[in-house]
Image (spheres, rainbow, N blue to C red):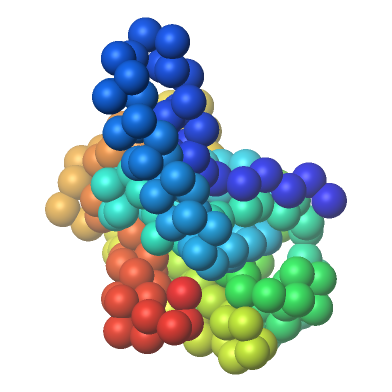
Length: 234
Ligand SMILES: O=c1[nH]c(=O)c2ncn([C@@H]3O[C@H](COP(=O)(O)OP(=O)(O)OP(=O)(O)O)[C@@H](O)[C@H]3O)c2[nH]1
Ligand SMILES: [Mg+2]
């Protein structure tokens, strides 16, 4: 598996200046360095399991901003496409989480994203990946051609599994409209999803703008609240 650790930069860059510092400053740096290292050693390790690079990027950007650059845990990524059973989104995400825990045998996070069209009773929902791969964002727009109602909800479902294998689910939703894409796709279906209250799609927005209002940040805020309430669960 491709596993990379994030949130550890603090541990490295303290050594680089050792020749240009005065002895007193060097001593102080060493003291801070060993403090940082012991903090890093006590930080819990959490694995984020996803096969999707774009998702990984957003999750990292959001965590970095939420924790001002210093995550209270060490996040590593495992590049695995977990099996996805059919069912509602919480069921799918819970089953992904349990598979992930079997692999990692420790705390882990998985995420499942749905795009639900109201005119289609919530479909494609958790199956949007296959629809997007088959027809692209413009095809998603055309699927609603016979309907006046173009409204949709983007839903991010996150499952966190703690060290005992207990799964907790968090979800975040952003409502919007499915529009005819006018830009290149930047993620999956961002170019056809226009969030309510905006006249541009997610694809037109900067990452910073999207990360303020997205389904993903809303679910991740709940995960952060959970970590704060149940400190031992981190
Ligand atoms: O434009 C987008 N903006 C987003 O914010 C977003 N989040 C997810 N997606 C896409 O929606 C499907 C979800 O399926 P999904 O959750 O199963 O993801 P995945 O299979 O790619 O990865 P994972 O299951 O290994 O984590 C996949 O096609 C993702 O590319 C997005 N597209
Ligand atoms: Mg998937």
